Length: 79
Image (tube, rainbow, N blue to C red):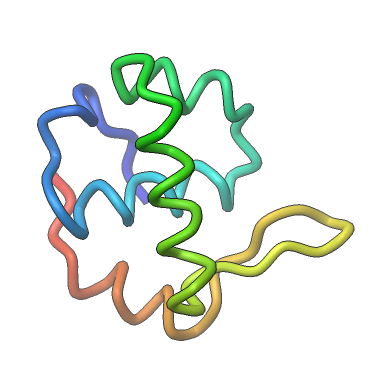
């Protein structure tokens, strides 16, 4: 997934896909929060959404994108 220059301008599922990609790349959560304009609650909300909808899973290796998550990532246009 491509790195986004200004994630706060992303909306809806584009922002969800951005967070999913960051987690799958094992980016530090503090770094993700910084990229989201310092909004820790926004990261928590997207993580909850991604887990609840089965887009990502976490195991001892870290976060992984599920086949359902990959399908949605491919549907969402991330510039």
